Image (cartoon, rainbow, N blue to C red):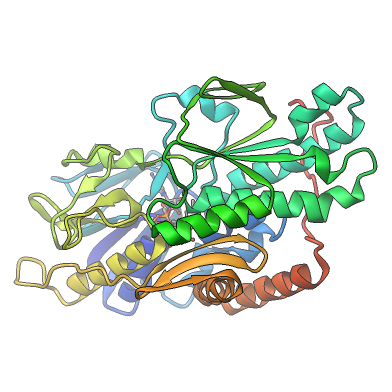
Length: 416
Ligand SMILES: Cc1cc2nc3c(=O)[nH]c(=O)nc-3n(C[C@H](O)[C@H](O)[C@H](O)COP(=O)(O)OP(=O)(O)OC[C@H]3O[C@@H](n4cnc5c(N)ncnc54)[C@H](O)[C@@H]3O)c2cc1C
């Protein structure tokens, strides 16, 4: 059997592996975590609405019935294209075909030191850290007697007005003010402040102007203060500088930029400005028809000459396409180009509020939110998760009480 190595069991890698698992290949899936993660719902873990197990599933369990699939927990450090080898955790593994789907990481635009004070949201670890920071900040505010010092625990700053920033800003405002604060005695919702900072003149810049305006209005109704057309120029332990203003804050969340996984550098192939492999129209890299890069780590343009967005449907469709090329033995033979079928984009802003563009239709409010909820539950990977997420959402919708408010790593010092 030919050997297929797949790096990363995110949306792209897992889709390819599931398709190829049905065929006569010896497949190895390597991931640095032991779970496939449904990133679109991470912000709900970060805001205590869902628990980690609701949105993640052990990769090993997905392939328990496929004896031709091995799952390895390890971090791939480099790839040798000539010798057809992948190096991970001091070991190596050979491949006939390689699918690299390592995703992306945050970009702090050359200011990596900001990360310490402004975490991004990519992994379960990030989400749990943010959840803990939010809960600890409220606890610190409850104890602090000095109103000036207290305010920095009640200022929440989100940097980046793309879908993740918008979702975080809406959820934090709603959950902190409506759901958490009522349980405190010394602080109230008039004291909290949520800021959304965006360097461009509008939020959700990849959406139509109408939906972007609607999202802005929805956020303003949730009392999120919008800072548009302004760049963050410093982040430190006390807060964030935006233009000539300094906002004191203990909770600064980074949702502003993305760059490809550093692993792509080791491929020694051409990359774009943010480190993604520039792939050919069949997603293979120059001169190596057996090596494919898919998902967030790949740069490929659509018919209009625009780069495809870093979203789950792109990664999923690319995973399916590459699996087909490999399983039908089309390498070296004429085969169709990868074509992305755009089925729309959507972002949620809070309870019963969302915006969506689906096949030219623009949806807002409750209808968009129902569409968003349906799609997100549908794509969760197993039935148990679908059921759990639905029941959590119904409970939350009816009671306004998010259930997951535990501080599990409490250090004793909210300033830590
Ligand atoms: C907070 C958030 C919200 C989002 N919301 C949406 C949304 O609403 N809708 C939407 O369509 N998209 C959304 N996205 C984007 C979407 O999740 C990504 O586009 C998608 O996950 C990309 O899939 P991928 O397979 O390329 O990478 P990923 O899904 O990121 O998977 C990469 C995998 O590779 C593993 N890995 C990385 N490096 C290595 C290595 N060196 N060795 C071994 N394993 C490695 C990682 O552990 C991970 O499991 C969101 C993303 C985030 C972070």
